[in-house]
Amino acid sequence: MRNILKGQVYYLRKDVVFKGICLFFLLSGIILPVWLGSKNGFQMDNPLEPLRKMMSLSLILYFIIPIQACFFITEGFENGSAANLIASGQRRSFYFLGKYISEMKVIGWFIFQFCGLYLIVYIAAALLTGASVGFSRIQEDAAAVFSILGYNLLYLAAYAAIIMMAGVLVKKTATAVVITFVTVFGDFLLGGYLKDSSSALLKGISDHTLMTQILKFSGMYLSNSQIVTLSGFHEHLRTILIPILIIGVCLTVAVICFEKRDLRV
Image (cartoon, rainbow, N blue to C red; front, side):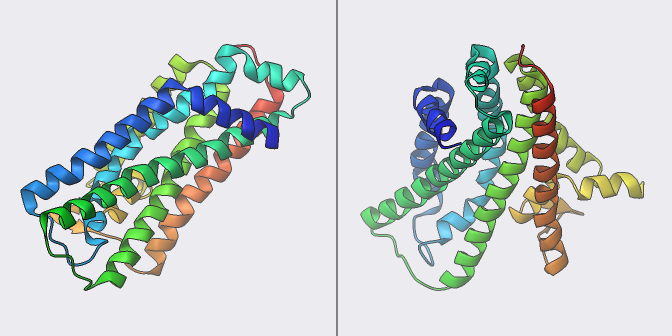
């Protein structure tokens, strides 16, 4: 497993898709705070307030990171490195789980790069322009920010599990890309168009989609023209259990199928 993880680090350092997304988040983390601050002013009640207000922008992560996960899981099938590693004695389950663990590291890095750089640039701009920086409500904003970041990590991990399971099943990058778009945008459409359905079943499906939960903990879910957020222990528990269940099922199915199917693309 350690050798597989090292191999994935080496691959990511050379991967054009990974580098391109890193560059995108780098530019976004610099341009967005300067643009938003120049429009609304850089003053803040506490150093975490800018990050709390930009959490809705984290939705961008869900339309970019799954694509990276798609390329990451299928590259080994396309270039034959997966077959070579397994022929050398590596267990198939270790190969797949090594890929998934590496993808979790990538997700953590992208979140840190996007949100961390945004906050650093915003505070630096505030100090340079002489804007006021207070320390009121810092505990409240800290709780909100870190809970949303934790949820984003968990839900991106769930999307990655779905995409990587699909990649193992189809093994072709082009097909996996189509599945990725269908998964992300289909989930978005299910959560949005079914929430006002008169059918209890369809409304229940909408209430339990990943995107519905993402919009809720990000403060962007609208119902009857009002923002609906997570409230109460049971809603938070449901928000945690849904991605955990998806991750468990997808990883199990992926490992079982990967163990039984051949590696020919």
